[in-house]
Image 1: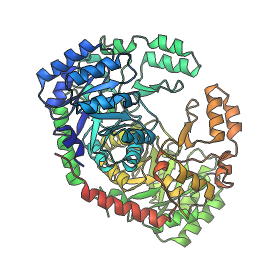
Image 2: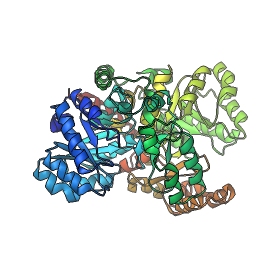
Image 3: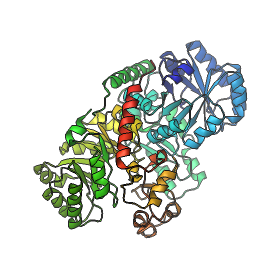
Image 4: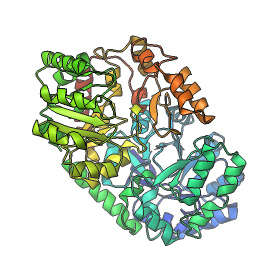
Length: 311
Length: 311
C-alpha cells in the first residue's frame, strides 16, 4: 500500500493536482514542504519561464516535487528538455500519451505518472513501463473523462500491476482511506488546494469554493467531446445554452476566450471560468497548505482506527 | 457504523437496488436469505400483483425485505396501502418526496429509506424524520442524478445525522469498505445482482454485463433533464444522435418505447435498454446471489484487515 510514498520519497500519499496557470512555485513548494508532492504546471509557459519556476521551487524546498506536462502543448519538446536539464525528479502527464518522451525521461531517472481516465489507457501506459498511474474520475475539476472515481479506480487497480493514485472527489481523510480501500496507494487532490493561503488566485475565487455546495459545479463541453468541470456562473450558463442550441465550436470558444485569465488573475466570479471539482461543497474555510495536509492525514488515522464491519 | 444492519435487522450491510421490472420474488428472497436486504420493485404493477409478489417473497424467506416505491406511479396510493396491509417492514422510495405517505407508514412502523442524489434532498428528508438515506451517485445504472458517489456520500454524511447507504459504482468488498470509510453504514448494489442466476432476465442481458468494460455504459436523456445510464448499443446510439440534434421529447420517447421490455423479457441486446452501472466492467461471471454476497463480505474483511496508512 505504501508504494507511492516510497516511489516518490514523500511522507504522505498526497499529490497536488496540476492546476493550470495556478500551481506555480508558492503552492508547489508549500505542498512538498508539508510532506505531499507539489506539482508545477506548464500551461502557457515557455522554456525559460519553466526553468525559472523549477529553480524557484528548488530554492523553496529540498523535498521532491513534480512537473505536470500537458502533452498537447506546442512547445512540449522544449519543456521536456528543461525538465531533464533541471533534473526534475517526477513528471505527471496529461492530454495524450507520453510514449515519445519516455526514453529521454527514463534515462534521466525521472519518475513518470500519467493522468488517465479509462482502463484501456491504464493498459497502454503499463505496456510503456511508466512508474504509476494517476486515475482521475469525472468529479474532478477542469478537463475530465467519462467515468467516476470509485468504479474507475477499482477497475484500473484490478486491471494493472502499477501503483494507482486516486483523483477526483477526494477532499478529506475519509476520502483518503476510501481510496486506499479501493486499492489505490495514494490520492491526488486539486480543489482543496485552491482554498489555501498559498494558492495564487484572487480571494474571490477562493470564496467561490467556500460558498459552493454539492451542486455548484457543472460540466460544459460534453457535446464537443472535451468536457470541463467548473463552478456554475453567468458565463458558463451562457455556454451551456449555446451548447444546447448546437452553437459552433468557434462561437463557444469565442465566448470563453480569456475566461480562465478572468478567474485566475482578475477574480471575476461571473465572467471567469473557475475550474473546481464536485468536492467543493465539502470545503468550508481557507487554510494553509500545511493545515490542509495535517488535517487530512490525521483525520485518515482516526477514520482507519474506527473503521469496522458490522458483521 | 452498524446502524443500518441494526435498523433493518439484517446480517450484512448490503441492500439490493430496486431494479424496475426485474427485482421480483426470486431475486428479492434470494438476497434476503443470503443476509442482505432484498427489495421488490413496483414499476407497472397494480395492487393485486404487488400483493401476490409480497406474499410470494414471504413464502420464500422469513428475513426482512423491502418494497421500492417509485412515487410518480399513478396508482401509488393503492400500492402504499398494500405495503401497509401486508406489513412490509421497510420501504425505499424514489422519484419524489415520500412526505405524504410518512404518517401512514410510520403508524405501521415501516422503516423509510428514500433514495436521494443531493445534499438539499438529504436535509429535506431528515426534516421529515425518515429512518435513513440511500445516497446514489451518477455511476449507478438506470435513472441517475448529477453527482458521483464518492463526493456525494461524503457531503451528505457530513450534512445529516441519518444513517447513509452508499449506492452507485460499488461491486465488491473494496467498494464496501470504501463506502464505510466515507461514513456510510452500508451499500446498495444493483448491477452486481443483474449477473446472478436468480435474476429473472434473459441470459443475453447477463452476458452483456459480463462482456462490458469500464466504458460500456452511457448516459442518455441528459439534455432533457432525466438522465438514464445503460449499456451502449444500437438503439441508445440512435437516441444520443437524435438528442444531439435536439429531437423532440416525443420523437425520443417513441424511439425507446417498449425497449425496457425488449431488454428484460426478450433479451434483445441491440434494441433493448439494458440499464446497468459503471461498475459493470468489474463483473466477470454469473454467480448465485449467495456467492455474490459471500464473496463481497469476505473480501471486505480481508481488505479491512490489510488496510494501512503508509505514514
